[in-house]
Amino acid sequence: MPMIAKNKLVLPLVAAMIFFSGAALADQTLDGIAADTEIRIGNIMPYTGPLAAFSTIGKTEAAYFDMINERGGINGRKIKFMSYDDSSDPAAALEQTKQLVEIDKVLLMFGSFGTPGNLAARSYLNQRRIPQLFLASGDQEWSNPQKFPWTMGWQPAFRAEGRIYANYIQASYPDRKIAVLWQNDQFGRDLFRGLQEGLGDLARMIVSDVSFDVSDKSIDSQIDLLKDSGAEILLFDGAPAVAALAIRRMAELNWHPVFLLDNTSASIANALRPAGLENSIGVISTAFLKNAGDPAWNDDAGMKDWLAFMEKYYPDGNREDGNALFGYAAAETLVQVLTQCGDDLSRENVMRQAASLKDYRGSILLPGIAINTGPDDFRPIKQMRLVQFDGGTWQPIGDMIESAFVGSGNK
Image 1: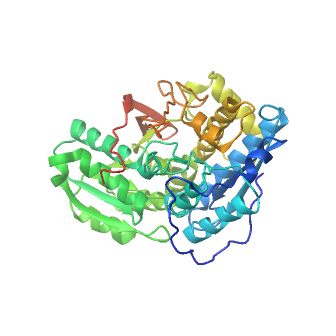
Image 2: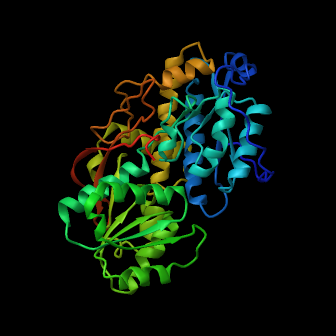
């Protein structure tokens, strides 16, 4: 399990630092350490707080690295994975990132969760030329190699996902009124914006949009307002616990719009089961990973390996929790990059290899999805598919979709 900081560091943010375009402040001490006997990897997760459900990502990654170490490590070097709890506080995320870099001497940051915390740490890490890789966030800010060449995302962009829902609405329900219930932060705004962009002129069909805070314990008033708008389609973009509240309230009101649920919350364990599986039948979302509960994958080699991994290395993990699949697949991608590095584990080579993935097909990515990156392409996963919940598992709708992308400069 990861080395987790139990006491959250809440210190004032330092004043904005000047970004050195040529001679960035590079901490060279670690390249030598990495070339020795271990590879130190830093990570920030919300192990406590309103988004603690996503901590499964970090726990799974820690278990995955335990498995790799038991098998001999990477090119003979063991991984030391250090993961701290920021409770989704950006100030804490920045201070803990500094601790990981300056005290724990990590080679790179990997898979840290959330948009605000990663944004808070991005300039600090880029100034020091420290890789900030495969973030657990779909913000398009992670795909800006010209300005931030040491930061790379992993999953499809939230705005691209919003466009996928827009295309689905245009094709299947072009004359229906639309409502949006969105989380009042950059994540919620990004997906909502993608929907508006994708709808184009049909955005006029959005008759109501209401926001909520991730800490809200009830959203009954928001659901009531959206129902009264006459909307026949509801897009939800927010955290899984709030998604469960929304689905339950709609069932209480006997309101049954076409319900579109963001990929981040499409968790049977954290959203649909708490909402009631019967209430969740018909929910539509997106997917880029295989579904552990789908019998279609019973004979799939990748899923068999994942189930064996869960049984041996993460027995307390919930196999219905999509965050466990996410953490496994992200860690698998990082191991591929580090393996490609060979004996050159300098930070420069780590980024070079991360930006040199060619048709890499992770074992639990959906068929048809391949990871490709390049010096000007920091979007590893670009495909998704629509799925619908049938009361037991997610069933595919249509073909794989190449997610549309709007560059971070076009905001």
